[in-house]
Structure formats: C-alpha cells, structure tokens
Length: 167
Image (cartoon, rainbow, N blue to C red; front, side, top):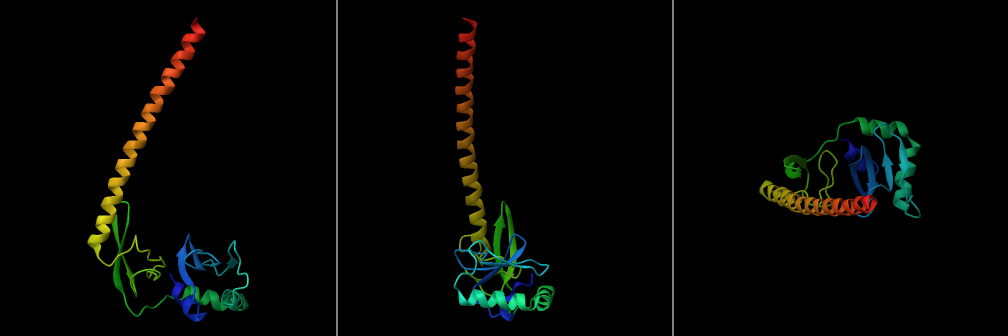
C-alpha cells in the first residue's frame, strides 16, 4: 500500500496508516493530522498542524516536490519481515502480514494493529470473533424483544384511539 515509503523517506515519527482510502499521518488520538491521496494530493486534517514542527516539516517536504511524493506512492513498499498477524471481519478470520506485532505497528497493507483486533495467535482472534458474534446475537435479541414490546404498545394505543373515534 506504499505507506512505508512515505514514512521512511520523510522520516516521519508519527503513525502512518491507510484509512478510508488515504495515507494518514497522525497520532494515537488523531489519525488524520495530514492526509495524502493515492494521486499525491496532500491535505491538512481538521486540526491542522498548528505549532508542531515535525508536522510542519512533513507537510513542507511533501508539498515541495509532489513528483517525488507520487513516486513514493507508486513504488511498492519493501519490508524486512513478513510475520503473520490475524484479525476478523464478522465471521471471517483474516491473515495479514506485518514487520512487528502490537500497537502502534502497521500491517503491510497499512492497517494499524489495535490490541483488541489484531493478534499473532489465530486462536485468540477466533475467540474474539466468536465472542463478538455471541454478543451481537444477545443484544440483537434484546433489541428485537424491545421492538416487539413497542409494537404491542403502539397497537394498544391505536386501538384505544380508534375506539374513542367510534364512540
């Protein structure tokens, strides 16, 4: 996903990840202090770069030579290691690759490895996926019961109003 080329070339100390189809440079709290499109367009996030000298430097260096930035985006990242790491999406267990485990490390495809959604042990992730599914069913049933109760209440209220109209 070519996020690593940018991180290394511009000596970025902040977190660099792929989010919502853009390369995002930010922190553990704000992921998009600076964003870069895959077409090479640089934009400041809602918070801007304020007085942060590092962010100012990244922005200045990137915008000074947009051709170089686009070249970095178009050049495939290379990694020193390809360790398997697992996550899940619904009931699907997904294997990805990374150079190092745990937060705030990034997978080869640019996803940040949050402690509660990425793990080196596939069995742990399977457990998370099952637990999440169980909770989804539990809360889904609770919401359905509440909705059914509300339907009964609405029907009773409607029947009362209809009876009032007929008297």
